[in-house]
Length: 306
Length: 275
Image (tube, rainbow over all chains, first blue to last red; front, top):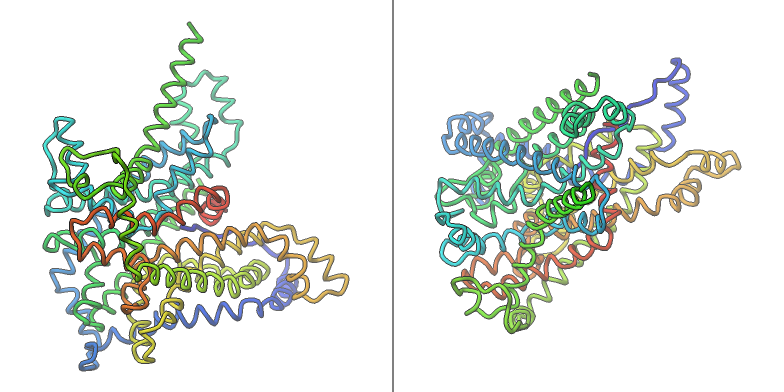
């Protein structure tokens, strides 16, 4: 949902740097209350999770130090492996499609047309709507016998689908909901990017007689690339975080066909009350997300330089 | 000839925009349609699209359970408290971080923002159980701070960074303390930023599901949790379910339509800036 930070101005000399730091330090008091909250509800949970992950910690039951045994068990747990693969598939699909549709939508909304403000407001409604409410409506639409989507398919002469009720279609169907849900955010990020592009290259391209497609391919796309990378980063992280809609619509089913890491984690912690094991999942998942974010930020730096 | 082509192009573009907004419009219209029909019409095949005549029975049924109002009240208490607390600590923090150019603090907030909410739940759940607070709204408000504080701080950092510093500097030269410069100069200028932060923090707290699902007892459920429970127990009762779902998300939809500009500004602030 948010991207990078602005670059720091480089101080001229060490003395100026020191002066600047002393001046800046006076503002530390402003941060203290928020820092206290962050320590209590964010840093403490991280540390405590790491601690719990070294125990065989059952809710209301035994609590035994096991060192790294939870991690060892995790890496030989086939169910966790499948959850990782499913998360990977889900994430790839839930990044690529919103990016494509979001780019198309951003190009459309970049043009001026009557009622553009209203159309844009309507377009972003899905991402603001309460995920649970939206997931419930989709659940009703996916109903194999009475759902409106199968009526649409059969009316169009296509065979009906089992949607979330079959192991082979459940992941693409959940991705469909995710695409519907989050394409608007990609659109907003890229629309902001389009608004920030310089005008000169377009005029040059026009003078050179470029077709609209050529202008898009050779001017817009390269200039927009840094924004596309930001959207890619945000989308990847959000897709990895996806929980609400999957949980409400399938709870990981049918069987465990849509059990992503988040669902696996939830079930371990709050269905099986296996707190130590679930904490190990959190730590591994956190490491994966951090590594990915770092990799993507690094890519972004490179895109910016070229 | 040229005019005709232009008109055709315009029509084509209009059609493209229609295609773009129709998924959003159709899903919400279908939700509305389901909520205004009788159970018989809702399970009819082929589906009945326009309720004829529309009925408010589903809404009556939702409100007839007095616990719906209790859950609505819980949601209001949780979202308002979590938003106000986040503003109280987050606005000064955003100011401090912007002034100190404390990029490490900003990065920490960013990391908090991208971590899945679920991963905070295990330790906080164990903590609140140990403190025997699980039957109250308190744990839910506290966990919602995980969402609201990073939003407020992040929006305020980028907002305060965008403000010109001259006015505050003038106030400081005139002998104001930094607190006074913040309180009387920067804060009034930051009102649009605070509006953005308030709207976003409130919406994302209102929409949150997983924290209350794990931490709430029978009496302390928030609306998303209560509505999800309706699905689990009444598989095919689509009318009341859609009515309840629509009621939960209606405040957010209205807020989005009314404050579109602020929401767009807030959502793109962090993402686009500096790219």
